[in-house]
Image 1 (cartoon, rainbow, N blue to C red):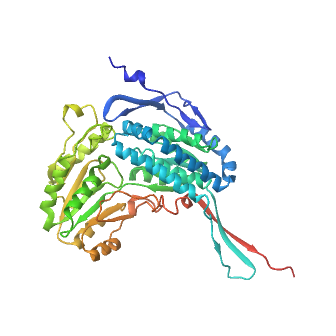
Image 2 (image 1 turned 135 degrees about the horizontal axis):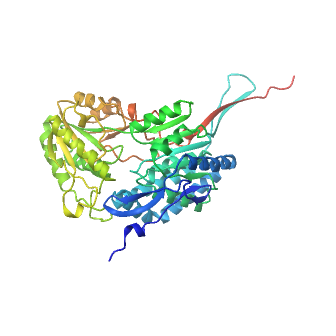
Image 3 (image 1 turned 90 degrees about the vertical axis):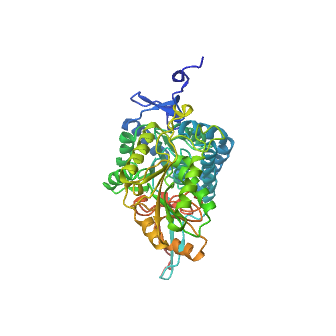
Length: 494
C-alpha cells in the first residue's frame, strides 16, 4: 500500500541570516503537485511581518561588509553558484516539474537560464562600474561611480520558479545589495534550494534571505516597509499597481515586470509551416503560463482559414499529461484556480460571439482528472473589442483575428494596454523592418512567436507591461545601483 502523501511531505523553513528558521507564528501551508493533486510537495512557513523584521535585521547587519566586498570577489561567488547549479540541474528540474507542472525540457531550460545568468553577471564583477567624462573646466577630472541601493525586496511568480529569482537576485547581489526574496506560494521549494546553493557557494550569512508566505500580507509588508530600499516584482498588473502605490508613498524605487497580451501577425506571404510551429510553442508552451505567451494571432485574410485549420490540428495533436513523462508536450496549469479562470474566458469568448475552434473545457480523460489539466483552446472570428482579445488569460488560450492588411494588423497589435512581446511572420524584408519600427512592444520577433528571450539582451515591456525598467542585458547590474557623479579639482597651489 502506498504511504500517505501527508506523512511523506517535508516541512521547510525560512532562510534568514544563513540559518533555517520556522515562522514566528508557527503556521504552515502546503504546496501540491498540479499533475497529481494528492501529492504534497512540502509544507512551508506562513510568514508574517514579524518574520520580515527578522530578515531585515539579518540583511541590515550584512549590508556594510557585503558592499565593501570587491566586485570581482562577489562575481566569484556567483560563478561558483553557476557551477553548483550545473551539477544539480537534473535534480532541480525534476523538483520544479513536480512543484509547478511544466515539462522536464522546460524546467531544464529554467535551470539553464539561472546558470547562464550567474555566469553572465559574474563576469560583470570585473567590468568598470562607472565612466570617466571630460570636464568643461581646466584642472578638473569627472567620473561616475555606482553604489549599492541597500536592501532589495524581490517578489517572484510561480511560472519560472528559478529563472526569475536568479535573474533578479544575481544582479542585485553583484551590485553589492542584500536581498530578501518572497517566492510565490505555489512554488517556494526551488527558491529555498537556491538559498542552499548560494550558501554552499560562499555567500555570507544575511546577504540572501528567503521568506515564504502569502502576498496579501507578506508582499504588502515588504512593499510598504521603509527599510527596504527597492522592490523588484514580476507579477500581474493588479499587483504591480499595488506595489507601485505602496512604494510611491515614500518614493522608494520599484522595478515592475508585468503582464502582456502578446500578438503575432501572420501575413499572406508567411511561411505557414514555420508560423504554425512557432505559434503552437508560443501559445501552449508552459501551458500558456508565460508573460510572453502568444495570446493573439492576427492573420491576413488570404491565409486565414488555412491558418486556423492548421493551428487547430497542431493543438489537437499535443500530448497532455504529467511533465515528468518525456513523451508529454503540454503539462497542467499550476492549480485548480487557474483551471477555473481559464475556463471562465472560454465561456466569455462564446458569449461574445467568437467561434470556439477547439478545446474550451478542462481535460476529461480519466488519467488527467487528478490534475489541473485544460485543453489547448483556440477561438477564431475574434474582434478587437472582445474581452478575450484584450485581457490576459494566462493559459493555453489563443484568439485569432482576421485583417485585410499589414497596417490594420499593426493597429490591432498596438490597441492594448500592454506592450511586452510581439512578432510577425512575413517573407518581405521591407515589411519586417517596418514592423520593428511600428510595433509598440519591448520585445519584437521576426518570423518567430513571442517567446524565447536571451539573457544578454534587455527584457521588459512598454505601457502597462512594466514601469520602464529592463531586466537582464548589459544594464542588469546597473538597475540595482545608484549613480554618483564625482568632480575632482586638481588646480596647482597658487
